[in-house]
Image (cartoon, rainbow, N blue to C red; front, top):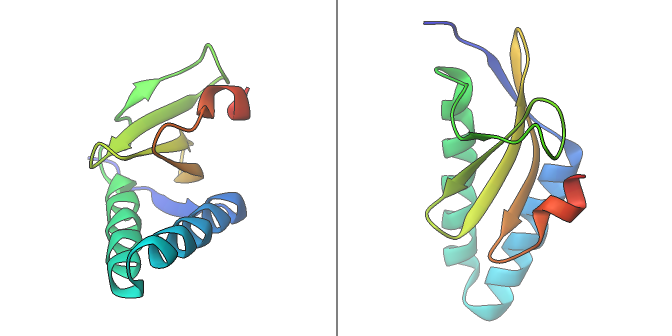
Length: 100
């Protein structure tokens, strides 16, 4: 099975920081940190069997989207040697318009 390097884009990092801030304000910093860490760990597991999630060529060629804990959507691209996490959307955000 092929192993790829997982890279989190700057936009996806900003999404994680914003998500942390939102959860920390609404709940607690500990809860926010635990959630963001789970998302990052999930993303890193895309290094093996990377072609998961739904292929969304209708939005952008090569775009894949996978759900996380029924509360977030992770948009990513699979390349020959790496997986690039493009964005991380929480809740009901309209990610299709943002990515097209």
